Image (cartoon, rainbow, N blue to C red; front, side):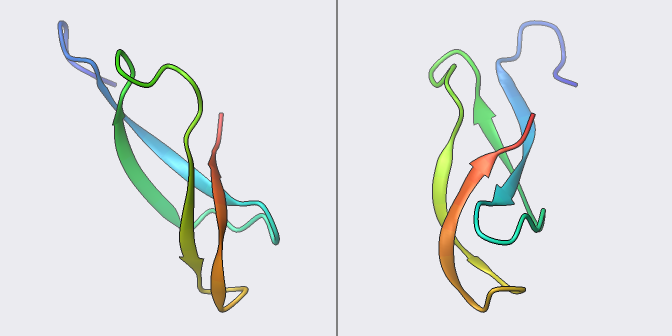
Length: 55
């Protein structure tokens, strides 16, 4: 978890096609309170697919 006063938190990204959880990243929860959705390469699907932030 983030330290006191810090707005960055670690999140896990999940592939929307196969459900593989292979990506970890950080985001600033003050600047982007909504969930992230990024196009990333999924090693299981072997193609670039949209990855959504997991709860």
